[in-house]
Length: 462
Image (tube, rainbow, N blue to C red; front, side, top):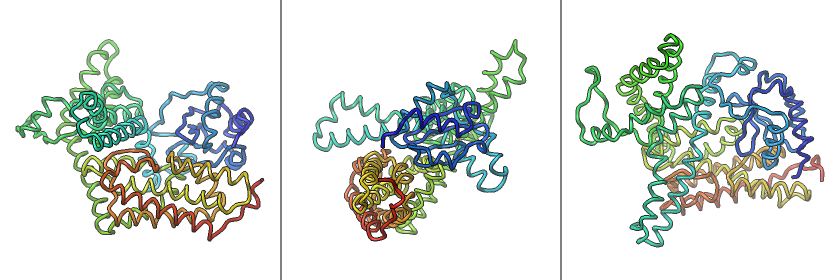
């Protein structure tokens, strides 16, 4: 749906309280993400009625305006015309949170964890997706041409596909330190200590190692997430402390020295092993849930996924998803649910397109369906079609439950990371048939349910 970019952009800026109410702006695939000085100054209901706006969400400390395909021209216009700050990372703490809720309770702290992990993982997750899909391409090539694996070109690309996974702690350390407004070099140096070749050799040889007489747990930290997060948290605190208390004339020498010297023993003896233990427990919990439910939990997770998206909390699941994949070698829980939710959103949109007589709505529904099914971008389908018409949203839940349960019962497993769309079928490798059948069930149930339930589109202009 074409919009007048200038009018919509100027209207958005006016309704969020003007340039003076904006700390920074960034974006994802479908949303403008503002960090506002005062969220209450934003006229949310008026923004929802602005041409091109599909919805408004406040989550992870960000005022998020869903624009779907209109995002990039609006973002570019706002940045160029209003000169807003775009490089500023999401803070660990935001003043606007206090305007909306007390600093207490499970919901508040869950929101802070969500916000922190989302900001820390965002710079890294797209690289993992790229490496995961590269692995799929290499796997397909090796399947059809087995001799290609001995080719040095294949080997070099294979090295590249493994790098983001092996050096995951370094990427995580970088994102975490940027979120904490600390020097990424310190956090990255500490993460690289966990991957240092000589230390890796000690792990392989199982030699006893101590620091100041305290035992060092010898485990492999490649492909891990939480050890890097915990070490980056400590390093950031130590860096700020030493740079604050050491006099200026001595700061440039002793602050870096003491930051690394103080952090290393704590990380190697306590935090890195603790991160591994916690990560293992998280994985074991989801494995146990899957074992008990027989995979039905995938359907339940897929069914509640749109509420996670609307709450801006879907990125929270990247951490346990990555842990599960790293520890078990596959993800039979999060990735199937994510993909099937997108298929359900697209299926409901197809049902709308088939049943409606409104040509404009049909065009929008087809566009949203393609975005959700092929690109894995569900916001236009959620806000532009299914939630707006209400009853198709019920079809999304029904399709998600049916398809998710099918995937779980048939044992669908994603063996690497990839985008959450139909194009990710190859990452399921030997369980591709299972996820394909689950996708078909999801799509069919959501389409049929939408057509049976019907919807009222009389208020939507032709």
